[in-house]
Length: 428
Ligand SMILES: [Zn+2]
Image (cartoon, rainbow, N blue to C red; front, side, top):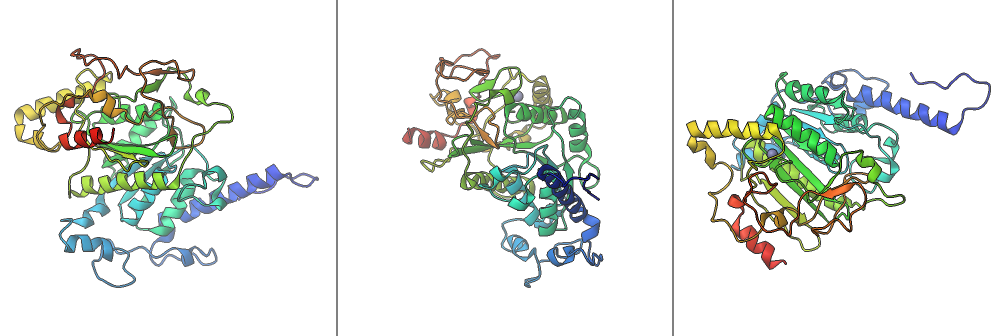
């Protein structure tokens, strides 16, 4: 139990604030413990039983009654949209970064009845986050993972939640991150999907490395620093482009990205854009995991023109990431034995278009971290670095003529969708 230090003088504001934060953490831990919210569990005196519903039965009921939290979801099955919606109760998704996009994505998955969530974040809730969805002012000072776990457990106590409060890019935490992805599933197996909802290049590369090493499917998401564009991308190691296959136009030089922030300047953010990107992300998660519709491999969003480009990105044979190249070799060996499996990345590829693929990949220029959230710094798609802030560099020159050098960073244009390209040209 938190307590004030035993001093003769009145406690300071900081001491009182520390006690409040500690008490909130205790409450969050107690509320988040799944066993305390099980059906019939007595929590007399805490008030929690008033807020949280009892756990449902092990199966999802399709009964159409007011008290059934799953009736509208199971209706998807009845209407023929999803063959087996209830399968979602067996699935585990890891959400890395519980900020403006990750927290909303976690809430959507919780309301959809996902079996288990793993939450990763090392940050705390701040009042400066209140222009976004999910977190509340009374949670300021709590860790994002404990605050999120507490809220999600109340929304749907059927969902198992593991909260991991650490920085996945810390050298002594990367193995913990790998272990959690490998054994964090409901039955101790690997998770079914990883969602990247982080706000910096270093964390994305750590997720990319982990997923390439493990052969783990994952989805990337991002929102630009001017708050009016974003994207999602599905990564299947060896089969679709990884994050290093087609890096952003501008990437950080080696060093601490946090040193790149400009004094007194922070990125913009909108709850609308972050909510839209989270919605696009979880929609893709549901389609991918439950097997309905056509999951997207890359979907962009430009709010100013309501432009949604979509395309398939094949892996880069010259990718800098050796684990990516190893997974590509694994997949090549697999399709040599099972050529019928090579048709799952969308429709058969059209003839290569006469458009440099790099310029489409970086239409919004995504990139470096600001100190306040999910935003990435947009940069004009200029080839030179004259306008860049210190500490960053262009990953490549989009104005350079196409090259056949297999070692050059590039996007394989084989699967670019012609309709998407026509739409892009129409919007230029
Ligand atoms: Zn790669």
